[in-house]
Length: 144
Image 1 (cartoon, rainbow, N blue to C red):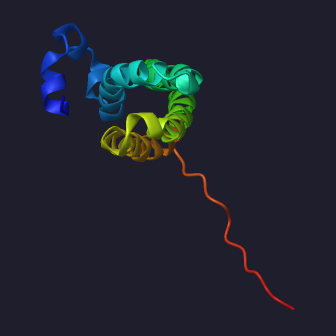
Image 2: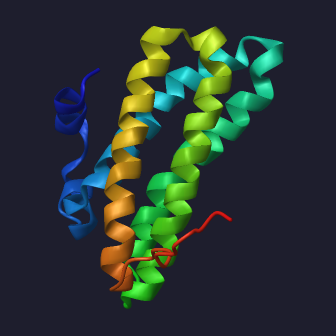
């Protein structure tokens, strides 16, 4: 199923909520639906049962943290939940990598593309919510 086809299948009651405007939330929710079949495939091999569980938890929690963060009243609070979602996105990518032997590249590669998009979006959203960027100070290094 592609994204446009999936989005048409989402109930209107989900789409009318203002969190639906958040692209990272929509992509995370889409990934969660895709993940259902991936987890089912991983559960069929005893070597990847624990990977299936961890992947399911990480992917499922990603959208939930974006939704919860969106509902917070301050940028600082929103940023904290978006940071959790960012960590979960990276964790999900790691679990997909570990399950790639069962899932295959035709599943692994598109899933990682979606996760990479979510990561890019969150990396932009977090400093916007904080109101400042986090960067290291410029230092000059000298060699003796």
